[in-house]
Image (tube, rainbow, N blue to C red; front, side):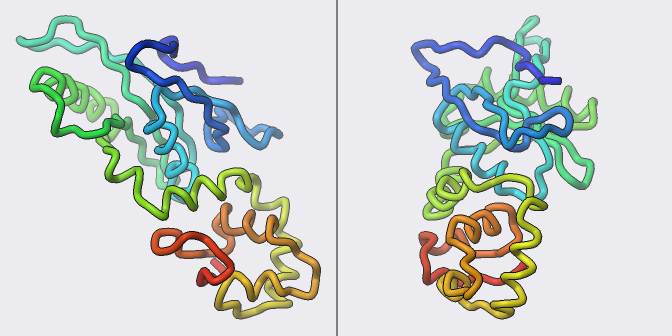
Length: 215
């Protein structure tokens, strides 16, 4: 079963439609590793890398729902948030992604305000995320590098147990790579991508000298 966007996503003079291989956009369990979703900008695509890496996020959907808003300034105005995000603690939120919210005019900000009220009535939080929060380096580059390795963590649980027995207290990534079991760097990246091995992705570009420890 698939979940379709609330409105048709199509290219325009102001939109750059992008595909993203999401591992968290399935409506129900699937044997597939990822589901290709469409987003409306490169910035939204970059935000997807953060959603993928956030262990608190269980699912997310682009262009999830269209609201119809009314006030003394807006009449029957449609608004579709960029994402719907489900969290592992049971919380849910709609998300608006913009390069800079400070550049928006008063009418658009008023529309977001109206939308926020409607969302809260339905039990959703409303999050506004801008470019400064998304395009943080070297974090974003590291997340992009690891995306290809994301997948079901149970697939490599046996290899992880062997790695822990062989290298019980690694300090840097290269310690793990020097394991005598022949476990390759690609597998270790998969452990990092799935949160089974922790590396600080915010401070330095992921390399063999990156500090690591088991989750």
